[in-house]
Length: 202
Image (cartoon, rainbow, N blue to C red):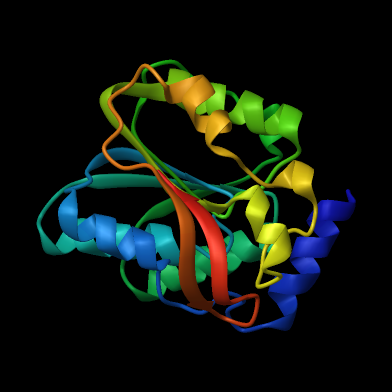
């Protein structure tokens, strides 16, 4: 309903809402970890992170199968057009995460950059991701923490849509954690994410 219209309207207005470059943390972690295999990017909008990761994999002759989920069909159409331009093959699915069908042990990687959901859906989504990952699979991303409310440099101005460390520890606390960061970062991503902010990276 309303959320979908909201995002469609946003994606229609700007050429690239968050710019074309990948998120800085995604860029850094892709230099460190060689992602490959069956990958899903959720709340991936125009695809800037997914396409970057695919390109990296391609450069290194790694095989990466990529699926993008978002509930804006316009954001996804832009991602698909850009993928085609760049000779990358992606699958896009316009989907409300409430209806997501998480299949156990099927994914090598799940990426989520600034995917913000109400607490009930957040918990359901994180549990879904946990069950869908294969052993040794990666869950990678960056989101705004609840502290971000004071920074006003991007993200939803609603506490329920933001994250705290417990959200991750609760679901992934018994897993191997390669990197978990809570703190300040500078982000220059299009017009909507600009300046000093407070994030969680995982």
